[in-house]
Image (cartoon, rainbow, N blue to C red; front, side, top):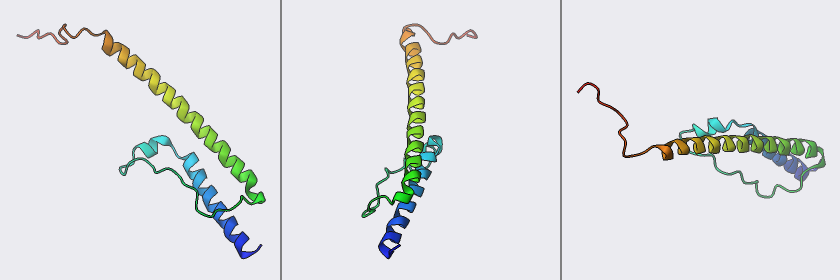
Length: 105
């Protein structure tokens, strides 16, 4: 391999490592971070074409990302369903009626 090819290969390895870590990250862990949400991933400048020998790994990373998106979509749908249930309870309550009864005095 030429020095340029070595740099391209190393850059792709680093990018794939980072993408694998992001795709495998538990969304709940990211939500609990004190420094706020994770920044969006941006590809490194001058990455160059994907080396052929890394194509299978890149495909696996894309599969992991699809799996992560499916998990997030399922979680989003569950939250929407729960939110709908909560909203239906709140809207059914009559604000004119007392919520508590003082039975002691």
